[in-house]
Amino acid sequence: MAVLEVKNIEKHFESTKVLRDVSFDLEEGSALAIIGSSGSGKTTLLRCLNFLEVPDRGSIVVRGETLFDAARPLKEQEKDLRRKRLHFGMVFQSFNLFPQYTALENVTLSEKLLAKERPDFKQNKKEILEEIEKHGKALLEQMGLAERMEHYPHQLSGGQQQRVAIARALALQPDILCFDEPTSALDPELTGEVLKVIRGLADQHTTMIIVTHEMSFARDVADQIIFMDEGVIVEQGDARQVIDHPKEERTRQFLTKY
Amino acid sequence: MFWSVTLSLLDGLWTSFEIFIFTLLFSLPLGLILSFGAMSRWRLLRGLIQTLVWIIRGTPLMLQLIIIFYGPGLWLGHNIWNGSESGRITATVVAFSINYACYFSVIFRGGIEGVPVGQREAGEVLGMTKSQIFFKVTLLQMIKRVVPPMSNEVMTLVKDTSLARIIAAYELTFAGYSFMKSQGITWPLFYTGVFYLAFVGILTLLFNYIERRLDYFR
Image (tube, rainbow over all chains, first blue to last red; front, side, top):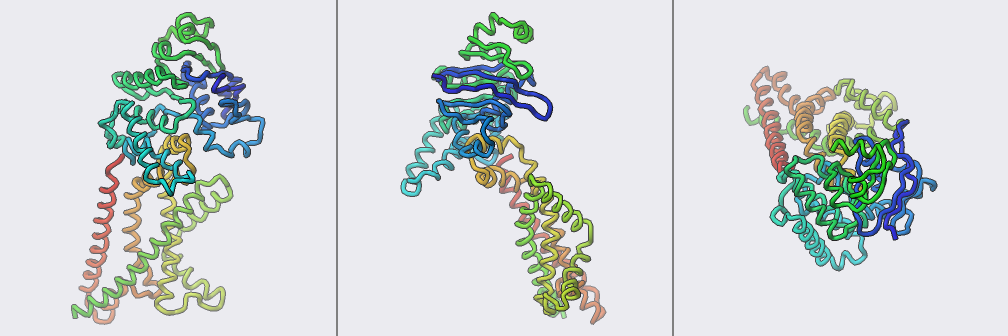
């Protein structure tokens, strides 16, 4: 069964339509890459999934639960918004790490805040916090940052910062991890280390949506690819198929640029 | 003579210090509330606050002080401040708090708006509440941004306390001036200046310390 079903999403900013009738499914454990030129609506789509933008039409269903349906009143949608958001993790193009916290604190902050809402938090405070700390350290180790846990973001390279951001997004164990051009703000020589980490996550069958301009990476790592243009899904299919043998003329035109 | 001047100036300094500290105590939170109002979704509230800030920043603090101290007595027929020294200090603190809150609100707004939107968004996608995002993410970054402009305002406030003289509150400048008037000597005026310099000097050290403490992140 699909872990995520996106149905007929539409979004416009003032008079410009940014997304038109976007629908797709995502299987558990699979990676989806979204490609397309700037302004094609890829980022807006990810932002809609994370409720950073409210779609004007359409619905978002995760594991059979309708998280959003534009047909229903907005007030009702905003209820439980925080809980709904936790289905998705988000890695931003510009990292958006919290500068006043160390790498480890960045990873553990949200988990600690959520733990405070647990009914048993007062009794087991010490154990719970230790557990969270351990979890955060394990995630940073997995990202190859064992030596950098106590560093502040400005003491880390861009690639290291983005890996901390990935660990931070993983900390709350989202159903679907979203990447918004995770390497676009990085120097070419730092892109590799971030892509390697994402590849590792794909190998572990993390369910992911990756908006990217790295075509060969998308081809190798993603199971499915969506090509978007002017807010529409132009082509969608098996990753290698779409990159190597695109069916649509527009996809072909786009890919020749890479 | 030197000792009697010193004691008298210390007395005046105490009044200036009271005005200074109580003004900060009230105007800082009030300024933060005003800055939230100035960024509100409701246009009416935004408009009201913009108008208030315009009026307060656009007229002399001395004029505001005179109106706040003498106004109620003339309008209501009795002086709500009572004529004693403490009443004068209270009126000064009220006038100063409103005035400084308006300046602070603009500084705070700049500080909050200067924190990149991505910080709030990162907090949102991590399931934080609005207040968690403000207190755990935005606040410290905002403080770091507002420390330099705040230090300007706070030092101006030290010297603005001398305006309380206009409603005959016995503050530092009044104390120094009274010796010139009664004894015809000017050196207490320079001595008064030394008191202000020491006051501002301590604040400079304090602000340097705060800036250093916030230096660990960028």
